[in-house]
Length: 237
Image (tube, rainbow, N blue to C red; front, side, top):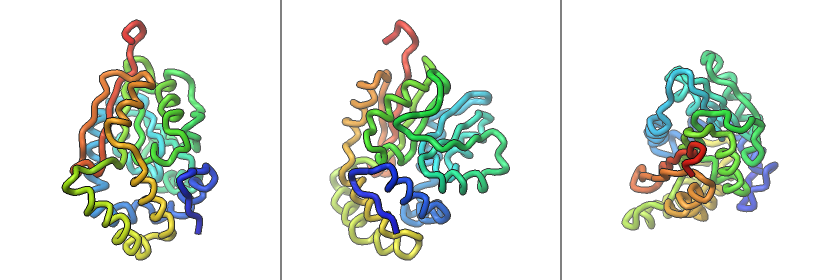
């Protein structure tokens, strides 16, 4: 079984997600103790998709988040680096006509400048070799006045932090072994979460990229954070 490491070599990350694609949604539900659905609802509300808008859902996986966005009537491009995830997504979301699935590298997006009214990435920025390059690409393809929403694991509040990391290190591997087709992949999950920067650092990256009105709020006591920002209109930078 393939396991990526913190070098996040693209071929390793892609192969790892190819292997877990079929059972990915089930594993997420179990390992998040049901919170994955709540985080998806919060992300969809933050994006605030509207009929006719063009939305990029990067690291879309099997398209569960894309389907939630598409329910608004927006046209959603579901992009992911894993061909295996994309193939599963095409089958599972075959009944949703306003989703297009695209294999895409987050550091070199195959879209024109200013293509989307909103861009979003959930639990995928952490897996990219250079997340700041990915943020720059997301900025490039966002239309002026458009918005970004990043949902990502983050730094829990202190009273919870020790127990949370203990769960990730000691409980989650056993659960992953029972429910996942590649339990070694979840060793990487713990490592990548533990080494991911806190909420303020990610907010700083968004501002450095050029987004304005950047703010964030914690979900599940900071286990996950939802960051938002806007691409300024010309002359308003």
